[in-house]
Length: 250
Image (cartoon, rainbow, N blue to C red; front, side, top):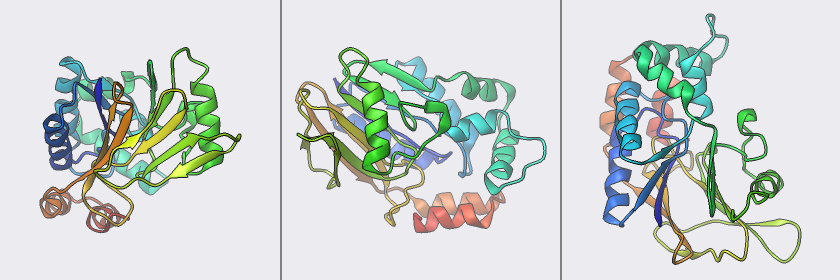
C-alpha cells in the first residue's frame, strides 16, 4: 500500500488539490485525510464537498477538533477559534455539517493507526509535539494487533518519532522528498504536517507518503498559489490573524 497522508487542510482547496495531484503522481493507492478539514481557511464548503467525493471513492477520513467545533459551535463565541468556527458553520449547509460531525476520531487499519491528535485520548486533542506525548500515543496504539505506525496531524509540523533500544522515543526531523526507512519490527509515530496552513515558516503545503511494502515514509512539500487563497480570505472577511497565518506560515 502506498498511503497518501493529508491532514489539517483547513478549508484551503488549492493546497488540497496540489497535494492530491502530487500524491497521485507518486503512485498513491490509498488516501487518508487525518482531520481538520475546515477551520481558519476561506472555502470550507468546497473542501468538504471534495473530501466527501474522495471518501466515496475509498479515502479514509477522520474528524479533527476544528471539524468538531464547526459542526456545533457555541452560540456565543468567547475565543477567536470559536468565532471562526461560527463563521465556518454558517458557510456550510446542514448536510455538510452533519458529515463533519459523523466522522470518526480514529481508524485502525493495520499496520496503521490513524488519528488526528493523540491515540491515547483522541477527543482531548493533545498536541503530539514532544517525545513524552508521542510515547503515550504510541504505547496506546500498538496495543492493537498488527499496528506499528501511528499517523496523525494537529501540530502542523512534520516529524517522525521512533522507539529505539531504550524506553524514550527518539525524534527525527525529516528532509522533504527523502525516503526514510521505517521497518515494521520497530514502532513509529509521524505527524505529517498541514496541507492548508503549515506553521514552520514554509508556505508550501505539506503531506506524507507511507509505503508499507517498502517500509518507507517520505515527507513532501508542494507549492500552491498562496496569494490566491490570501485574496479569497480577505474578500470573505476572515479575521486578520487567519490571513496572516496563511501569509507567514506561522
